[in-house]
Length: 259
Image (cartoon, rainbow, N blue to C red; front, top):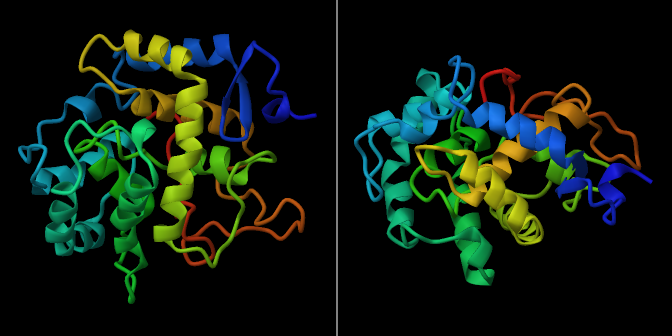
């Protein structure tokens, strides 16, 4: 039985389908949130003053993902700029203090609506899910989950992942599934996540941000080379390492030291 399936082991926490030692991940979170040495995205990403505020998206907001090592090149910037009004319209529907953990079906549908901009035909050049999530999480930090290849491994790529791999699935369909899986973790690991939140001396982080920190650690220590886990662990078909082959896996590797 894998660690992710061993739900009775109290020395583990479970992030999606991955089980990881509590002490290991708490130590990693403590190092990440210590804000020393300039190695990690906290507090730079969380404290970044882009000037947009909670209801408006500034040009600076589009560049914030770089502080979590999600590159925003010129094509990505123009793609994001082209949907600015759509994103700001979405913000009007979601209260600033909305929490994913409280979301019912309507809230999850709103999450799907946000990510549906990535389903546009033709596709927006270089507009990846990881980048959009890292723009919008700062606007609704308790509601919009962060997302990258390590989070994806925990929730979609690991042996006991709660979300199956379906490359015909749209972003609008995928985001609510991811949201519900994260809600399950936010509820089950509530006390441990509170410990992680308390480690942040400023700026304050939400349990959802804490969950991302844990998922990043769990995914990068448990997965094979990022992006190369199989399309279906049952079928053994190999996944590609580009958005063309799998739109939910980042097209570039992310630096382990800079998340």
